[in-house]
Length: 253
Length: 271
Image (cartoon, rainbow over all chains, first blue to last red):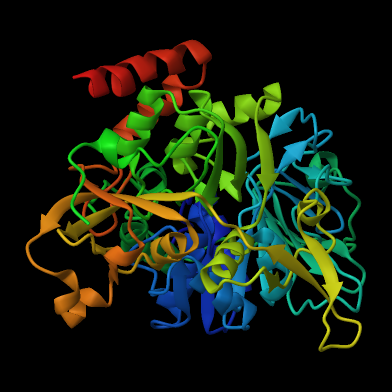
């Protein structure tokens, strides 16, 4: 702990810090579309690592070294050259299944989400997939998804070096046990409680007798996020950078 | 191949009922051409997005131009869900063939290589695979108890995109947007709108040639300045955020969408 007085921070900053911790010591982190918090986390991890891991933001011109078109990301992942990726879901269930398609009967849905993006492939081939969902509710975290965009686990004969390792929400951090196919509550974010997590989670999960509080971002982390990461994010996520960090749009190109 | 004189002339190959492949929202979407297609009233398209789309798919769907949509996702990104796409799915007026990004890339690569299918990892155990009658899992013939999914080649009638420049021979400079090349290789015909005409032959300069789609693959090229607007043209201009916000707000209702069409599609094209 530093001697400085406790900083106030935004939820997005806490989540980016938590995700940066989960990324760990790896060579290549890729971030898909519409994922500003994971993108901030990946850039934070790179800042902490002095320029490593490689970070590929699919939505960015600048933070994207691919020169072989949209397929290069997936080819790269299929070869095992991407270590960490992020997925969200309109629904995520207790077995780690992700639904990015629809609610209700698929043929006559009650709600429609954008679609599965690369999930049905990347969930299988990227070793560390971090699930994130900033709306932690019984609507989004369900017992069983209505449509499986990508399954949490596969039978032993299915080629699957990848899969989920954790689920980060606005209330807590869950780890995922791939052998048991279940989530385990690892920590509850400051200002939230275990009871609240139970109340707002639609699936059953494991938890220790004493659930720790998620560590708040340090003053140095907040400085890195605000001074280094935020301006970098503005190119790919102008609205997010403006709302969260007060960073104005810079013209691309 | 000479440059087309008008956008309408260049878009002639995009006929009612054709399979049209378009690039994802940030790699050079031919939006001016899309507005012209909506204005013309093209119908019954089988629209394939490579592999996702934003305003372009939403506009075509909202205007009633699309019967079948093959996509990995349609969304306005930071500006929220794609309202007309969502409404059409909920109303049951749009057939969606849900895919996953690398599957669309692979299915086009099969056409590009002239082979009937392409294998892809993943997908097994997903409802994406379950609901696709045209995709199937087989045993890897070179493996032992190793199921793998096969995707039939996707052969679009027309590929449509916007690029920075073309020369008078029909060569198109696409830079690093290599999926545009795959689209053009896979499609029977390719229609391109460009910002400007390059003086000379793009293939003469090795630096430019590496990022050039040869005119051999290109059916029609026409100049449409700021032709990707309000979407970005990578390395040239950024997305028009204000416009997308206005679209998201108007297109939230059928009436608002009709207003949007009047203002930005029909009035602009008639002008």
